[in-house]
Image 1 (cartoon, rainbow, N blue to C red):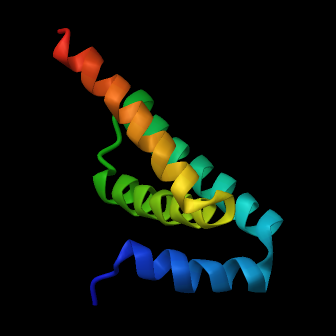
Image 2 (image 1 turned 45 degrees about the vertical axis):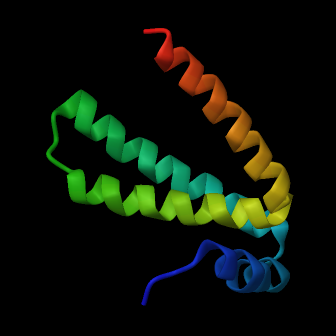
Amino acid sequence: MKWNVDTLLKGYFHKATVEWGQPAQMLVAVEEMAELTKEIVKNLNRGKENEEEIIEELSDVIIMCLQLTEIYGGQKVEDMINKKLERFKARIDNI
């Protein structure tokens, strides 16, 4: 099954926020980010071949970022992403 972000934001992520609350979801997001950080550090500092673990944790972080988008307002987040992507594009175009 493929997921549509709009469906997630309007359905499952909203339900998760209602069921478990914003603070709990925010803590889960922090935990997932820490797990991704740990795997990246293992890869860089220890030379560990852990691509699968990085992809798994990255997926968890993306899911939780979408959850945070539900909490903080999808349109506001989308507007900020577009603003930052435009700035990024301008930097790359100047290389």
